[in-house]
Length: 154
Image (cartoon, rainbow, N blue to C red):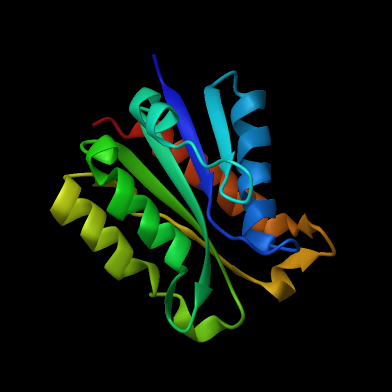
């Protein structure tokens, strides 16, 4: 049985990557897919949800052309629990120029933990949101990511 664990890694109270994670969780619920949303602001326990997961989505902020330190800490502490899982990414950044920033993080997951990386990811900036709601284009792209993730099998 498929179980998707979403890890929202931003610690910011007004995080847009958190909004992307919540939108993806809504789509999974609408599709009847078992899922767990872990918000690192209040979910210190990751080991068990990651063990149960067949698929993982990281929702990450991009800072200075890289994922945030909290996302890196997840793979430092729980990389073994990610081994062999299918992984997708929801990224939120301040500008358009760092859209390839997720690649070093994806490479670490792929090479160190043999994760299957979904070749489609979402990259959004503040302009892609209508207040606290992802805009139509981003909602569509999140749906495409969820569909691609669920097609992938470890």
